[in-house]
Length: 437
Ligand code: PMP
Image 1 (tube, helix red, strand yellow):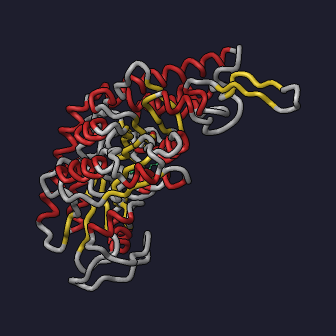
Image 2 (image 1 turned 60 degrees about the vertical axis):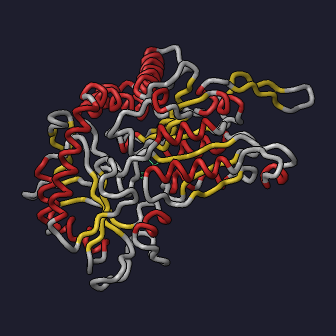
Image 3 (image 1 turned 135 degrees about the vertical axis):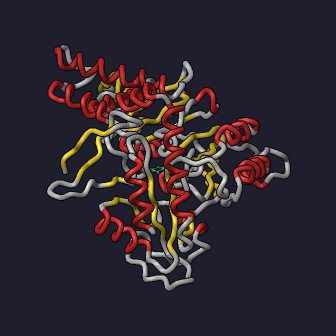
């Protein structure tokens, strides 16, 4: 594919074009990976020939790379509204960030997580044998989400009769709530600030999976009062293999390094008994062992700055226009059912999943690609419990594709997802609506 610059709102975006044909490829799978902003592409191209190893070189290229890497950290700190004592750690992705936090949880932490989460925020906690995970039922309104959490955390209070108290010999460990800011299936925005208030009222901490929220909405840790947030570059117009975990330093500082190796260790010395003593860094470097992905960090910071410069008010307004266009168009097709947990009026980002009566979703998505040059996604979107709930509890849905044809009126086994954002032209969503019709 070749790439042609298009407008964000106007400006700054690369949209892939299919070469050798007349068809302008409509990339409507932003929720999986969003196309690079022109500005990110330009920044990366300008720096790419000059990379060097960060933090450990006296040479010019090492110094340049160190500056870019640490300035990228500062840009992310600002982008996320971090508090003075927060750390920004560069990772590979949201999945990596949440696994890092899971690995850093204090012993016997109790984690509360809605069953509706993406697998990246649902599954890392179970990897720890010494951590309890409580799965919360799918709420059907945003208010209900807050109530469900409230109830679950209240049940944890250390009253003398609490089963937790007795099972832990009189003490309960810290608690962590994990919640996704915007669903990668329905696009619905979760009541993060309210959930954070409830978590804190019960002495729990909260981590925000901002993979889908951060590309579309401002995420301000201090304002939302969340303890950590995680997001990925490739969903935020910076497809160069980097992610971020940002937030409270204390648990991270006290945890074992995520990876053991150079960069994370401050001093290493042989002991007289033959062993090795290691003093680990207490800064973000503790969890960034090895030579980091400097280009990835630089790209993600460039994308964050580009969104800040474009202004979230304008980005949100433009995206709401596109959502309205798609919804109005799909409303004219009676066979289409848009999936929603919180109802039609819930605020959402530019992500919609739907099923079409009588169609297998994989075939539907394949037809959109082959016949109309439109890239969408089909399946269960790494959120199997959520999609099954939305589809009415389909029991054994095949994970991604190959689902048997659902006859008209039968329950669908998977869904189609369309998603868009900065740089999506009207023509792409209009073509999508025409194709569905
Ligand atoms: N959380 C959400 C809500 C997501 O949509 C995704 C990606 N689909 C992830 C986490 C995981 O992101 P990554 O694959 O970049 O680790």
